[in-house]
Image 1 (spheres, one colour):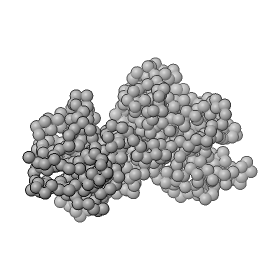
Image 2: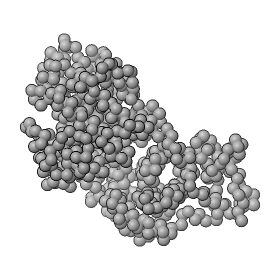
Image 3: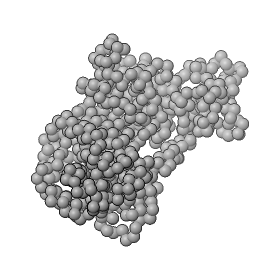
Image 4: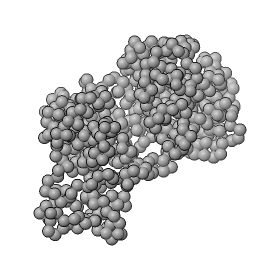
Length: 609
């Protein structure tokens, strides 16, 4: 009979309870300290390949993060560490039946790209001889999808086994299978509220992507000459799938993973993704470049007019529009149309080309246009009346062009969002402005995601700024070419705010007409955006009786803590996620956006003024 395992030396010294997780227990990992389990003298012949590591400062990050379990789970017993064979890695009939039902019947997985990326048919044929990492990660995804039918302790045990298998096997030989295990494990961790762990695992997936040279097209690599066309497309598919995450995170300000990958170096795999998938990545890549361009205020106002990078990015946006097939975007109309007719027109387009029209791509593309032109829109409000820029026709034309581009994009986003609401099932149950009753219900309420929130925020900023910061002269000039009015802008922001509230309630899992009374106790990454837009609307309607107190909107990132149950902050006072913040301006005279570029823009507007 194996002897009782003793705690690690550090836990013994501090007289703390050790969770006995090898090679680094939870307390030692949290303290970033070396963890050493003294081996039993009479049981060395039973030590497995996962025996504890000697105390050293050279443990790899994968040893410390993936192997041991950064956040020890509760509700299950740790497996015996002194065993000749690791029973956790065995494949069982139960595992096979669980994964088989998942890959064939789960609506999310079966409709996703992963069956093609993994080749699930071949994988299931060789299920019992497949390496444990991907097999156990798929089991974990399956039990998470069947959370209402499977006990929680079973789900936790599969999650533990997957983490253990990934750590034990994946670093032996980088492979597409191990990359898939890392990517999907990060998905599991995110769904389990292990945000820090999910970020770490996805970072290792990117490291493996580089090690496998997936960022080089197989046709351009001599190492891939022996591969079949199917295997080449699989490599391309995993590259693009990872880039979808990287570019979206970079566009929204999540800089944990560097966005140095060039998306034009790898061909698009045949038959794997829709056209819109690649266009999404290209739009997000362009937004990331715009963020980089405006990450520091220019040295002078003249630099805004002479930016070669801005011209290049404008051409990129035009090229994306040319590449996008007709009917995939809902574009602004050239003639004035009332909302009812506009919704009917969009509904007809969506009904005719239901699988082609992409509302999310529509709003993100127009948000990118607004982002590119917004600094010059701001310049209109900060230039002195006698500024030489306002006496030069070339500069006036450039400023006027940016004004129209920003407003046209912002109000179009609001109209598309209004149409989305009117064409959504159960919309009548929500407390929104009256809508046309003849619009067919094309979308389900539960299908609304949170990703469009950043584009909505960009549109709200523009509508608020034009209404509250621009002079009457420029507002009149805008109204001559567009249907601009203070009432129209307020309507647009009210629609955006209602949409943000709905999206945030769905993110919480409880679609609601309005935020709950205890919303402060259940914040999301959307909360700073929603708060800012709500104050913008009050400011536009001149309902703010006094100047807002000095307030800076920031974000706290939570992750499950060591006990596996309580959410604890892993980042405090962080920059809120968005495409671009307020660029140095304040809402209501006191509300600021937290970001590293905000102060440089504040100083820039002071110099310009």
